[in-house]
Image 1 (cartoon, protein in one colour):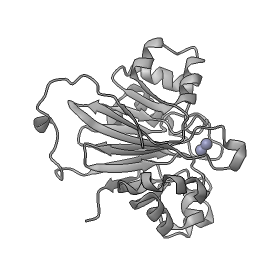
Image 2 (cartoon, helix red, strand yellow; image 1 turned 180 degrees about the vertical axis):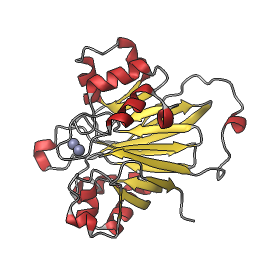
Image 3 (cartoon, helix red, strand yellow; image 1 turned 180 degrees about the horizontal axis):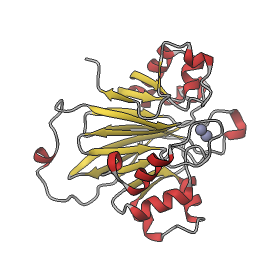
Length: 276
Ligand SMILES: [Zn+2]
Ligand SMILES: [Zn+2]
C-alpha cells in the first residue's frame, strides 16, 4: 500500500479543457540537459529532474549558458511547474543553487528526499517559506504518492516515488535515492531512477509497484542497461522504452557498442508516448 500524500494546491479558475490540450493532441517530450538532468514537458506542464548540480565526478555538467537560462526561468525553462530531486549527491543536487532557484521562482514546487531539505536548511540561502512549496519524502521503504496541481489542472502531475538503494552497495545505503514514476496531464508517464542500484534484489519487493502502471519512457542510469540488458530493464520497470542517462564524459565502450538508447548529447530529445 502507498502512503497517501495527496496534496492539492489551490486552483486558479476552472475550464481545464480550454487551457489544456486534449489527450493525443500533443505528445510529451523529454529534453536532455546533462548527466541525469532531464526536462519533461506535456502541454503546459513542465518538470525537471536533477537539474541543479555543481560537481562533475567525470560526468557532464549543464553548460553555463543553459544553467543561466534555467536559473532565470527563460527560454525553454519558462513555466517550470515542479523540480524533482533523486538524491543529494553533488552530480544531482546543489543546496545553494536549489535555494536560489526557489527564491527566484515562487511558483515552482520541489519534490525531494528528506536529506535534500536538511542540506537546504543548512545553507545561508534557505528561507522558511520554501517549506510550503516543498513535498519532502520521508526515508521509508514503501511507495509514496503525491499529486501536484499545475496550470489550472488539480492533478497535472501525479507522482509515485519509491526508495531504491543507491548503486555501490552498503557504503551508499545511507543515501535516500528516490525512483520517481510521474504521469503528466494523465497522458504521459516517465520514470527517473537517480543512481539506483543494479542489484535485482532491491527491485523484487517492489514488483507490484512497477507492474501496476506502464511507464512510456524510463530514464535509468546507464549501468542498469549495461548490467541487465535492455529487455530486462524494460520488463522489470514495466517500461515501453528506456533511455539510459548518467553516461560518463568518456562514453564507455558498453554504451557505444550497445543498440539500446542513451542520452549523451545536451539538447537531445525523445517523444514520450505509449506503444499501442
Ligand atoms: Zn549518487
Ligand atoms: Zn550520480
